[in-house]
Image 1 (cartoon, rainbow, N blue to C red):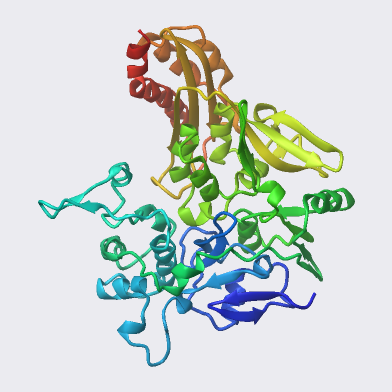
Image 2 (image 1 turned 90 degrees about the horizontal axis):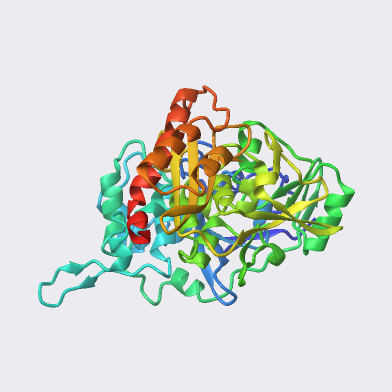
Length: 498
């Protein structure tokens, strides 16, 4: 199909004739925009980061940083992208005055040496620079010192200028060291009102295009959910893609070439987050960052999950629908939704049906979802449990795959456990509920003796194995320790209940 256009750094570029599996990164570099680099090809290093104008409500847009190494270029038909080259007035005669504030601070504070990772850092920093919620700490007029507000007090890695350092959690540097990069981030002031990229956020993001490209493979961005349903009914081998954080890795490292790809990330029917008296419904195509902003802490257990789920670059593209659909036994969201007693909404030409997540998986990366069905939404029943926690045991604190993950939702009544749900990841072929442990706790007093006995049961849940990330004995020990830790952290609940 002719007429596929992508606006890059303010210039409309023709993307017609691009292979459906050509990554955005490769297309940009073929266009001569070589600032974006490839470091890992799986979304972990951030060297390829770019900015995309994404919706922020009906009338505004938000510059959002994403990895260019994962999504197909055709997914950006009609969209607006800024690369590191487009941030400042870059030319052969470029002077320091022409640099974007982020670029200038990185240069002046020594945030770049070899420069390979720098364009990605700059784009991630720019997204945080323009984040509408970012606000500096207030100054005490008598002492002249910065007064740390509530936003900054809850996160020791949030700078006095309101810069959330976790915005850079998906960007890796091998030679400079992170202190000068952090110094550059914390030195950034508020964007001036005449900043064209700031002004751009006051207008709506580009509407999604009805894209269809055929060749050896086919890429389609459907116009409606009905079109998705019909395509799934008529084709036996279809790959649904939203953020491409999973498919992109398969394409890059395993050379997967699905014959038909349906891009569903911009379908409005999949992008709603609604509340009613009995439940919260999360649309399958909302990114994790969008869900995090929309919930604004109203589901504490998800609040514990967000900062531990990959990196901000990944959360800006990844969806809960995609994470649950892959069926990975170490997917971070499944244990949390199991603890929340969530239900999966499946839709097709036959209508909709609900399935408890605890009954959704049937085997390793297998589920009850039929080939003609899709995951439309996740429903969380209300009310929520009063005490919750999410523990992720991994080799790194952030941006790593878990060895074991544990999510707990507990309700006490007069010091007695009235209900408890425990979701586990990494200890079986599928995410599972710790049913034996739950049974050992329900109806029992929330005491050290009760929890110690239940922790022994917890250590035997699942069928943990030895692999490169952990031994089976270590995984069992972490299960036991997670329950003991949860009790220690929630001892006050017992005192209040008494």
